[in-house]
Every structure is written in C-alpha cells, then in structure tokens.
Length: 259
Image (cartoon, rainbow, N blue to C red; front, side, top):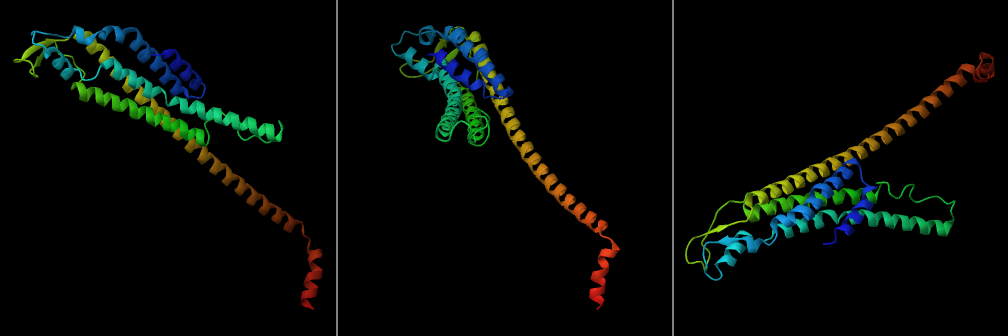
C-alpha cells in the first residue's frame, strides 16, 4: 500500500484545516498509520498459519479459522484508513477549482479586476460546506468500522482458547490464537484512536458552526448599529435646523397665514 501518496495528499489539506484538523491529522499519522505499518502488520503476520487446532482432520483447521476470523484485522483497518482519509481529497479539489476559476477570471478581465475570491483557501460558501461534509463522512466511517470490528469478532478481546465444532470437524476441538495478548492490545489501541478522531472531528464541526453563527450575529448587529446611527444622525440634523430657525424668519409665514 502506497502510504507516501496518502501522506502527500493529507499534507496538502493540512494548510486548509483548523487547529482541530491538524491535531486529527497528527493522530492519524503518528498513532494509526505509523502503528499500522510498523507494528500491526508484524503482530498479525500470517494469521492462518499461526492458528493451531488440536486435530488433523482435513478442512477442520480452515473452517474454524474462517469462522472466528471472517475478515482480517489488517485489511479491515487498511480499508478504514483509506475511507477516512480520502474524503480530504474533495477539499483539495474544491480549492483547486477555485484557483482555476480565479485564474480564468483574471485572464479575461485583467489583473486589476474585482476578485471572485479574496482567499481561495478560506472556508466560505461552498468550500465551508465541503469541509463540514468531509468531517461528517469521517465520523461516519470511523463509527461504522468500530462497530463492524465489534460485531464481526463479538468484542475486542482475544481468548486464549477457542472451542470449534464446525463441520467437517469430528467433534468439539480446541484452537489457539498466536500472541492473543499482543493482538488484544493493538486492537484496543486502534479502537481508542478511532474514538479520539471521532471526538476531534465533532469538536471541529462545533467550532466551525459556532464560528459561522458568531459571524452572522456580528454582521446583523453591525448592520443594526449602522441603521440606528443613520437614523440618529438624521434626527439630530433636523433638530439642529429647527433650532437655527429664528422667530423673525417665521414672521412672514405667520402674517400670510393670518391674512
């Protein structure tokens, strides 16, 4: 698996992320990708070869292994990391689309024309929605894979002894997993880091939504203050004009009305 390409992809997203997004990215690389590449693959190794049963019945070893390990942990985590990181490509593509549109606009109307985007990488408009939707997708992917891992293996534990009575086993046979404690530790570690990433993504969504609401309230408050100031200024000008009007200037109007 080409993790260098994945690292280059997410590094490009890093400059468009918030502080929570940068922490999320660090956790993904340091505690998920690096642990997966350096340690997890070596811990599991050839799982089926290390799975031992106390019988020589042909086919019994294979069916027992397939019953208890229908999907490899390594392949499941590889799919999880791919699905949880590739949505960030949408952010990079959206920014690239904005930059290309801005470039074509300048070529058409000149360098001194009004810009479409003041900052193509700033999370406003469609880019804001794209970024938030990628966060929602990341949360959904991590949550689904954590549940799948629990559902498929009936928990995150690895028992020292497994009782198997699948056909063509002649009777209930005992099967043993290689390094169950080590596998249990790495499984719990990967689950905990997935939950931490979910928590960080939730915090980032709350931060983005809260920031947008604050900006909207501030804009409404500023517009209300401008309108109030304009009305107050108009009232003061009228009062000033009335105050400057002398009784002598009003006398002709009074006499004409009297006549």
